[in-house]
Image (cartoon, rainbow, N blue to C red; front, side, top):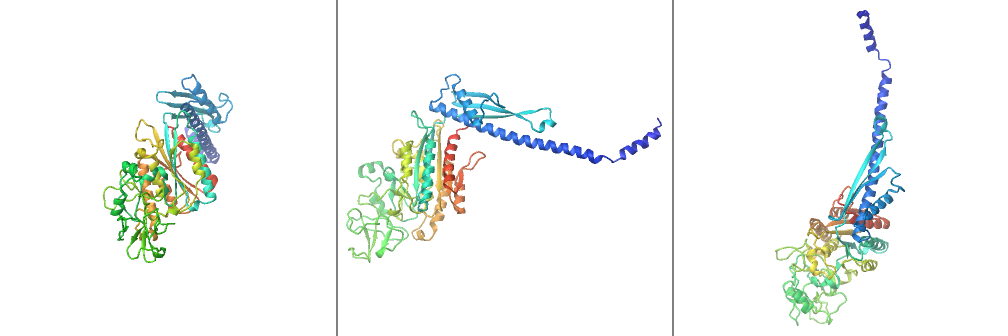
Length: 540
């Protein structure tokens, strides 16, 4: 062949552009088809992995519970394995595991470290990707492990029973909280109580009840206070756990007020006061419903009047019963010390370091009727208390949170009733997990600590309450206690942010802050939290 004739032919061939679009289109369709195949098959793989994960987690957790409760004996051949497989199949929703694409690849029951572990997979058929691949299936695997050695859970339910909760909202809370209690206690057995719960209903303060009242002292309307320390021997001998007469004498006034002196007894009293006709700062909390000369109380006359029954020119002060005890079971917030020194305001320090204030501005009539229930596994005790909730008063959320912490604090163990002593979750051998569920429907608007007497009427309380709340949330989380928070029909961004910040940080799998609007959502939330607390035993 003549080379000179070949060269022009090759040039014409390489320069010919006809048919290029068809070639490019063909290549583009292939790329698009391949990308679509990757997307479809990848999303299917994720869906299948999630399904296997959920079924496997449910199976390992249920098996661990069954072993811990004694329903399944890991020493009997294949009993625990068969149980886990049955739960796995039920949660997948298949009739026959062998006839499905799912496989339960391994089950390990380790009685030495008290754990249940399993792996599972699904042989997923390629839908589109097999066109560009030599493979027509892919194996999607999952694993789960759970320890059944974690023995104890302590939960403080801190619940809003303020006036804004009256009616349907209180009914919704009662229904939701009762279901949560039943769910949480469901893993308890006749042989062992794994879960105990305390209830802390709160409003303008908390009602500590007869068991905890001994740790509360009758305080003045001051923003700070040198709390007396608790004396068990004094309480045993006199019914009052501190030298109340000396405390009153040394703490009779604040903000420049005068001391109050009982002319007959020579005892000074601290507390709210009123001028003739009822006007004054704060409220004489014990004075409500009492009159001058009542045999059950001490009234201390502030100079300027004759001391007769006509109090138009007199000022009267009241804080304790005539034997030094408080007039009710109410308690407010812990205060910073007035004279300096160590502050226990944002700690769980027990009463031997400093008792808890019962501020004089907390009126008797406003003290919540619903009492604190200390840690118990008795479902009837808890549900009866919840069903008897009554709603009244303003909102001091930080006070509820403070007392919720005390009810599960190991530092308070020797100060709690028998059977309600909190365990030590810092002891690595104890294996105790502690939780607080904090719920409110409104804006915090009441505080006593760091609120001077005239500030009680000038709107400072809400700011102070949120300041105290934030500090307590931080301290509690630093104490390795998990916090769930629930806002019920909240429309205030300050309240929402405070609850969100208070809660333990959400993870990819666990929600700790909830903002709900309806009774059904509230019920679902409480039950979800109960389930989460149980499922947090999953180790990975």
